[in-house]
Length: 144
Image (cartoon, rainbow, N blue to C red; front, side, top):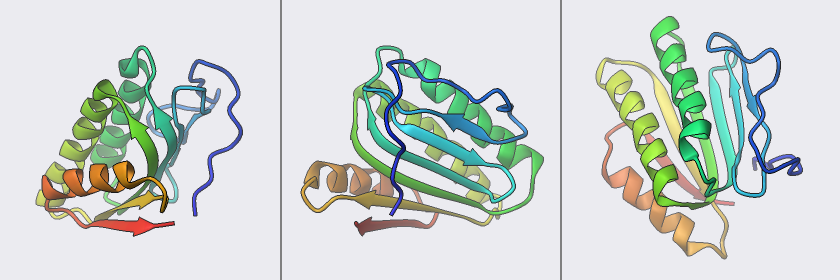
Protein backbone atom coordinates (compact mmCIF):
# COMPACT_ATOMS: atom_id res chain seq x y z
CA UNK A 1 0.00 0.00 0.00
CA UNK A 2 1.31 3.39 -1.01
CA UNK A 3 1.61 5.78 1.92
CA UNK A 4 2.19 9.48 1.32
CA UNK A 5 4.83 11.15 3.43
CA UNK A 6 3.85 13.65 6.11
CA UNK A 7 2.39 16.92 4.83
CA UNK A 8 4.93 19.70 4.77
CA UNK A 9 3.22 22.95 3.75
CA UNK A 10 0.31 24.39 1.81
CA UNK A 11 2.03 24.69 -1.56
CA UNK A 12 3.46 21.93 -3.75
CA UNK A 13 7.21 21.84 -3.98
CA UNK A 14 9.33 20.19 -6.62
CA UNK A 15 12.62 18.59 -5.72
CA UNK A 16 15.62 20.52 -7.06
CA UNK A 17 16.51 17.64 -9.37
CA UNK A 18 13.02 17.49 -10.86
CA UNK A 19 12.85 18.01 -14.60
CA UNK A 20 10.69 16.47 -17.27
CA UNK A 21 13.35 13.83 -18.05
CA UNK A 22 14.00 12.77 -14.48
CA UNK A 23 12.10 12.09 -11.31
CA UNK A 24 9.17 14.22 -10.20
CA UNK A 25 8.74 14.74 -6.46
CA UNK A 26 5.89 16.88 -5.16
CA UNK A 27 5.45 17.00 -1.42
CA UNK A 28 1.90 16.72 -0.12
CA UNK A 29 0.18 19.75 1.35
CA UNK A 30 -3.02 20.22 3.30
CA UNK A 31 -4.86 20.37 -0.05
CA UNK A 32 -2.70 18.48 -2.55
CA UNK A 33 -1.48 14.89 -2.86
CA UNK A 34 1.96 13.37 -2.68
CA UNK A 35 3.25 12.86 -6.22
CA UNK A 36 6.25 10.75 -7.19
CA UNK A 37 7.30 10.13 -10.77
CA UNK A 38 10.18 7.64 -10.98
CA UNK A 39 11.66 7.90 -14.47
CA UNK A 40 13.94 4.84 -14.21
CA UNK A 41 11.25 2.58 -12.74
CA UNK A 42 8.52 3.88 -15.04
CA UNK A 43 6.17 4.60 -12.16
CA UNK A 44 3.89 7.47 -11.23
CA UNK A 45 2.40 7.41 -7.72
CA UNK A 46 -0.11 9.85 -6.28
CA UNK A 47 -1.70 9.64 -2.84
CA UNK A 48 -3.86 11.90 -0.70
CA UNK A 49 -6.55 14.47 -1.34
CA UNK A 50 -6.53 17.04 -4.14
CA UNK A 51 -8.41 20.29 -3.78
CA UNK A 52 -5.79 23.01 -4.22
CA UNK A 53 -6.86 26.56 -5.09
CA UNK A 54 -4.94 26.34 -8.35
CA UNK A 55 -5.00 22.72 -9.46
CA UNK A 56 -3.29 23.72 -12.73
CA UNK A 57 -0.05 24.44 -10.86
CA UNK A 58 -0.04 20.89 -9.55
CA UNK A 59 -1.40 18.99 -12.53
CA UNK A 60 0.57 20.84 -15.21
CA UNK A 61 3.74 19.43 -13.64
CA UNK A 62 2.31 15.90 -13.50
CA UNK A 63 0.90 16.06 -17.04
CA UNK A 64 4.22 17.38 -18.37
CA UNK A 65 6.11 14.56 -16.65
CA UNK A 66 3.72 11.87 -17.97
CA UNK A 67 3.79 13.24 -21.52
CA UNK A 68 7.59 13.56 -21.49
CA UNK A 69 7.93 10.00 -20.19
CA UNK A 70 5.55 8.63 -22.82
CA UNK A 71 7.21 10.60 -25.62
CA UNK A 72 10.86 10.11 -24.66
CA UNK A 73 10.89 6.45 -23.61
CA UNK A 74 9.38 3.24 -24.88
CA UNK A 75 9.34 1.65 -21.43
CA UNK A 76 6.11 0.58 -19.70
CA UNK A 77 4.40 3.02 -17.33
CA UNK A 78 2.81 1.92 -14.07
CA UNK A 79 0.47 4.43 -12.43
CA UNK A 80 -0.65 3.87 -8.83
CA UNK A 81 -3.28 6.21 -7.43
CA UNK A 82 -4.66 6.38 -3.92
CA UNK A 83 -6.72 9.53 -4.10
CA UNK A 84 -9.30 9.96 -1.36
CA UNK A 85 -10.88 13.09 -2.81
CA UNK A 86 -10.60 15.18 -5.99
CA UNK A 87 -12.26 18.54 -6.60
CA UNK A 88 -13.56 19.40 -10.06
CA UNK A 89 -10.31 21.01 -11.22
CA UNK A 90 -8.33 17.99 -10.02
CA UNK A 91 -10.71 15.65 -11.87
CA UNK A 92 -9.99 17.65 -15.03
CA UNK A 93 -6.26 17.21 -14.42
CA UNK A 94 -6.67 13.46 -13.98
CA UNK A 95 -8.68 13.29 -17.22
CA UNK A 96 -5.78 14.95 -19.06
CA UNK A 97 -3.39 12.38 -17.58
CA UNK A 98 -5.71 9.50 -18.48
CA UNK A 99 -6.20 10.88 -22.01
CA UNK A 100 -2.42 10.86 -22.55
CA UNK A 101 -2.24 7.32 -21.17
CA UNK A 102 -5.11 6.23 -23.43
CA UNK A 103 -3.38 7.65 -26.50
CA UNK A 104 -0.19 5.78 -25.60
CA UNK A 105 -2.14 2.58 -24.95
CA UNK A 106 -3.91 2.91 -28.30
CA UNK A 107 -0.45 3.14 -29.86
CA UNK A 108 0.57 -0.18 -28.28
CA UNK A 109 2.33 1.14 -25.20
CA UNK A 110 2.43 -1.21 -22.22
CA UNK A 111 0.99 0.47 -19.13
CA UNK A 112 -1.20 -0.12 -16.12
CA UNK A 113 -3.25 2.04 -13.80
CA UNK A 114 -4.08 0.86 -10.30
CA UNK A 115 -6.67 2.78 -8.30
CA UNK A 116 -6.45 2.05 -4.58
CA UNK A 117 -9.33 2.92 -2.27
CA UNK A 118 -9.85 2.66 1.47
CA UNK A 119 -12.70 0.46 2.69
CA UNK A 120 -14.39 3.39 4.44
CA UNK A 121 -14.26 5.70 1.40
CA UNK A 122 -16.82 4.48 -1.13
CA UNK A 123 -16.69 7.88 -2.85
CA UNK A 124 -13.12 7.08 -3.90
CA UNK A 125 -14.24 3.67 -5.20
CA UNK A 126 -17.02 5.29 -7.23
CA UNK A 127 -14.60 7.86 -8.64
CA UNK A 128 -12.22 5.10 -9.73
CA UNK A 129 -15.07 3.16 -11.32
CA UNK A 130 -16.22 6.25 -13.23
CA UNK A 131 -12.71 6.84 -14.59
CA UNK A 132 -12.35 3.15 -15.52
CA UNK A 133 -15.59 3.25 -17.54
CA UNK A 134 -14.19 6.00 -19.77
CA UNK A 135 -10.95 4.27 -20.78
CA UNK A 136 -9.83 0.98 -22.33
CA UNK A 137 -6.27 0.72 -20.96
CA UNK A 138 -5.62 -1.75 -18.11
CA UNK A 139 -7.24 -0.16 -15.05
CA UNK A 140 -7.35 -2.15 -11.83
CA UNK A 141 -9.34 -1.06 -8.77
CA UNK A 142 -8.31 -2.51 -5.41
CA UNK A 143 -9.33 -1.97 -1.82
CA UNK A 144 -6.46 -1.35 0.61
